[in-house]
Image (cartoon, rainbow, N blue to C red):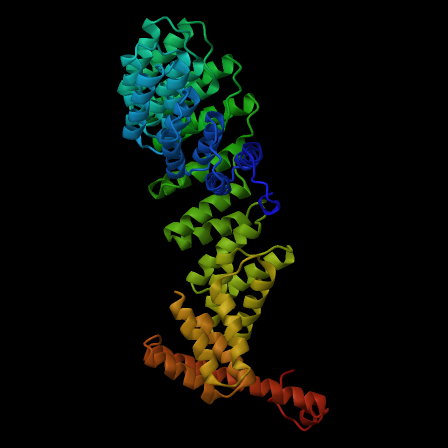
Amino acid sequence: MDSQGKPPSEKQFEILIRMHADANRGLRLYYVYEKMKKFGVKPRVFLYNKIIDGLVRTDHLDLALSVYDDFWNDGLVEDSVTYMILIKGLCKAGRINEMMEILAKMRANLCKPDVFAYTAMVKILVLEGNLDGCLGVWEEMKRDGVEADVMAYGTLVTGLCKGKRMDKAFELFQEMKAKGFLIDRAIYGVLVESFVACGKVESACGLLKDLIDLGYRADLRIYNSLIEGFCSVKHVDKAHKLFFITLQEDLQPDFGTVNPILVSYAEMRRMEDFSKLLMQMEKFGFSVINDLSSFFSSFVCVEERIPIALDVFRDLKVKGYCSMSIYNILMGALKKSGDVKLVISLFDEMKSTQIEPDSLTYSIAIECLVVLGEIKEACTCHNKIMEMSCLLSIDAYCSLTKGLSKIREIDATMMLICDCLSSVMSGPMEFKYSLTILHATKSGQAEKAVEVLDEMAQEGFPPSDVAYSAVISGFCKHGTIEEARKVFSSMQERKLLKESDAIVYDDMLVEHMQKKTADLVLSGLKFFGLERKLKAKGCNLLPL
C-alpha cells in the first residue's frame, strides 16, 4: 500500500500482528511492530497486549519488555491483562525481582491480583522448578490478604513434593485440612510418594489411613508406593499384606506392585516365600514367565546382585519357571560383568534343555567364545543365526571380526564386514573405514590407505586388527606386498603401530599373499584343464 501512496492503517497492522502472534512467529511479529513505529502508527492498549503476549509466548522476553517501555513512553495506562502477561513472562524466565516490581506497580496503579492470578504465577514457577520463587509469590499473596483456594494449595504442594521440600509441603497440607478444604486424592498420592522417597514410610502410612478415614479409596499408585517403601526398609511382610489388599480392592495389581516384594525375597534368600508369591500371581492371572523376565532384567542391573539372581534362577528352574528370555538376560549380565566362562556354561545348559536359543542367545555366546579363543565355535553360532534367517547383534559382529582377524582368516573377516554393513541400519564406523581402506588400495598406492588410517585415528577410531586386515586384503588383491609394508612403516612412524605388531602383520601379509597366489595358480590349472593331467602323473600337491 505504501508503494501506492497510501500508508498502512492500524487495522491492517492489527491483522498482520494477529496472524504472526497466532502462528507463534515472535520475530516477524516484532518486525511488523517496528514497521508500525516507522509509519507513525501507535497501537492501542489491546494491540500492545497482543504484541507483548506474542513475544512472551515465543520466549522473546527482552523484546517484550522493550515494547512495554514504548507502551509506557506513549503515555498509555496498563490494564490487568498487560500486567499479567508481563508477570507470567518474568515468572517463566525466573526473573523474580523484576516480577515483584511489576506486581508492586500493578498493586499501586490498578488493583491487587486475585487468587486466579496468583495461582497462575505459582503454576508457572512450579513448571520451571523455581520453588523459592513460588514461596515468594505465596508470601506476597498472604500479604495482599488473598485467600488461597484448593487449586493454589494443590499446585504448590505438588511442586514442593517434586522438589523434595517435604516439610513445607506437609505444612501447607495441614493448613488445607485446618481450613476444611476437600483435599483431592491426587494430593494424597503425591505426598505418599514423596514421603516414601524420603524414607518416611510410617508418615506415608498415616496419610493412607487419613485418606481412608475421609471415605476415599486409595488407588493402585498409592499402594505401589507404599509397597516399595516397606520393601526399602526391609518390612517385606507388610508389603505383602498390602499386595493382598490391592487384590481384595480389585485394583488389578501389576508387575510394578509385586516386583519390590520379589526383589526383597530374593535379596533375603527367602525362596519359599518367593515361590509362594509366584503361585499367588498365577492364581490371579499374572503372566508369571513374562513378569519373571522383567524381574531378572531389573534385578541384574546391580552387578552385586548377579550371584543372587543365579541362585534364584537355579531354584526356579527346578520348579519349571524358565524361559529363553531369562537365559538371555542372565547371559547378558554375566557377559557384561566379564564372567564369560559362566556364560558359556549357561549356553551349554540351555542347549541341553528343550528351550531353543534365539539370535540374541547365539550373539551373546559368540562374544564370549571369541574372548575364550574358541573362534570355530563362534563361527558355528554365526551359521546357526544365518540358518534362522536372523542377524547378529552389532557387538557380535565386532567380536567375531576381531576373532577372525586374530586367527588370520582375512577373507572371512572382510566377508563378515560386508555382511554386517549390508544388513544393519548403522554399522560400526570401524567397518565403514575398513571398506574405505579396501577402496583406497585399488589405487595400488600406500599413501591413499595411510590417509584413511590417519583419518580414523583423528576421529577417535585408532586402527585395529580389522583395519590392518583390510590393508592386507586390499594390497594382496590390488597392489603389492611392498605397498602394504609402506603402510605399516608409516603407522609405526606415527606411533600408531608397535614394532612387534608390525612384524605380526607382515607375517600375515606374506601368508595371505601365498594363499592368494596358490588360489590363482589352482584356478589357472582348472581353467586350462591341466589339473587332471597333473593328478594322472602322480602329483599329490593338489587338493582332492
